[in-house]
Length: 600
Image (cartoon, rainbow, N blue to C red; front, side, top):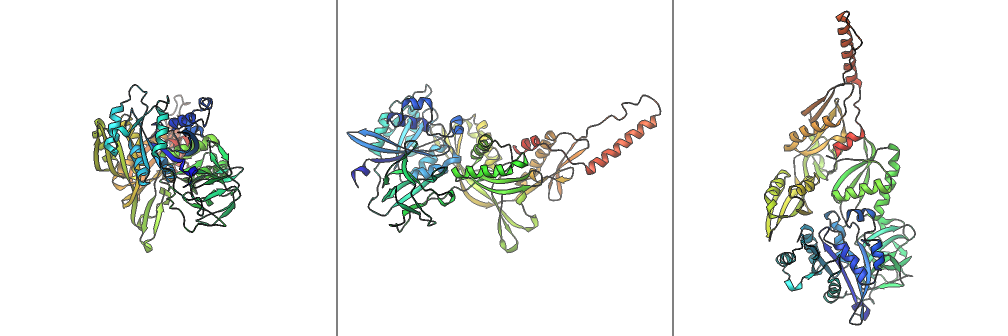
């Protein structure tokens, strides 16, 4: 290993959401002189480049940055990758870990260990990273430093003397942490004389340079005049630009083993650049690739429809642009008799869906109707045991053709203060969850459960927060598919089916869900000039019915005395007219009604 490589330190910061990762990153940038303090004051949360990230105070996309720090007359190169904390973006964390040798595990002194703290720490241990435990926010009056340190000792086996205490906001002890990172993080291995092998851990599309690949060089080196090739698909290109992030893109002559940076490929198709792929040289190719990792698979599906039909093409182009910077987003065309043409979009979770919806509305000026979230069911048909995917009620086949349906289950981890334990266990039983394990960390309880993914997307997170007064946190991962008795509830308005309002539910919940759905529709749909029956059907059986009464127009208002038979003839004529309207009239279902119903 040469001297330059021995001075490199690659590390990331991992923690639960809102425990101070991005604020700590800002302090690193300031104290290493990478950016001026005036720039930080002008733009707080420097690595959160998207306005939605800044407004919500969360990190969505990982952001690498190169810094320098002089210690004992040696100038060290520190490559930091900031990571998201929310469970919906945990796939970004796994990418960061693959490019690092150590991880700073940050814990809020006012909240202690939370669900994502545990999940991300275990991810780091699986990647054989050195963990540097840090307690943050020690400047707050309600900080409980000793309790938080004890939780870290009990959960991970750290010694109390190994745990650093800092305030990322004020900068207290952050210099000591930087020195510890240099001393505790091993320098990267790799041989710059070997054939090039560089791991791609992220990518995005740049309007002038084409596809930009974020990479960590493990062996060899990259120069600005090289011709490179993706190992998986053999697509080759001439390097348009090579450089690092500081935190903006900074061109340089090349990168060598151990360094983190980017390569501008000049390619126009982002799908050619797979996360987890290996970059090699065309004229001096490596024979083996680096161990990659799985690309994120969508877990939650929603249908997106433009309120104005003429915006369909605009929505298609907008989704394509978002997919250029978010490889976890998937979309495919879908049609509805009620809502027209739209797209079925796959997301990592509900927050991910919320972020994408907000970006489509704000950045692309679209007005959308979004159906309720669903998951992917797998149905085995009697004919040839064919397996099909069911993403929405519209995909549900004739029940007589179905041999078996399986639904996805997750392993759910919940951290909660012990005083809310009873209420949360009761809540879990309502959402079809089974508690597998229960551990105590001081006053915190860790619950490990098995639960259907559909229950998670049915507002479980919001209900959990209200049940625990906001103190409980959760993390989850996909487990396996299990057999389930899932049925389709069809919604009929004035005896006409409305596919967009149909739902998939477990059979034992069908009657309860049908009654609630019928009541909700009755409250939402405006009265018509004719009586409207609302029916919720399971196959040929009506499980629930409500009726929206018609407006009554007083046709006798202008009659003053006279023959009473004339009054009866007018009322009879009105009654016949209403019967005719009931047969031929179409129910007026405004967009607001769809929105309120589909939001559940």
